[in-house]
Image 1 (cartoon, rainbow, N blue to C red):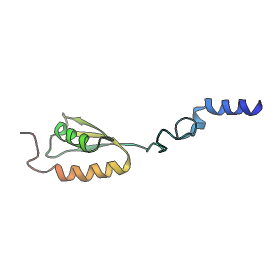
Image 2: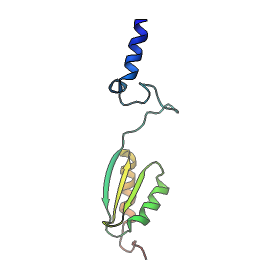
Image 3: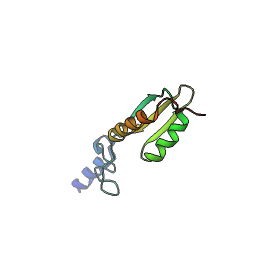
Image 4: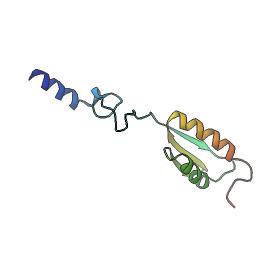
Length: 100
């Protein structure tokens, strides 16, 4: 009985769950969620809405939001995906790539 109340107390405390979901249980598929970062990328040549559409198709696991007023992309993704996105953006954000 004492052990039952200890488990319930541990489950009700959000701080004791740690980074994994469900009180330490793995999510479906057995893979722990990756930490995500948010980065803002300034574009020199490509139009943010156009490039956002392309990047969202290539990297569906990333959240790419265009900010057309300043021609920037707001990207939320894990570190590996961020690095891959940065490499692709560098290749696509070249002179002559803006909207026509």
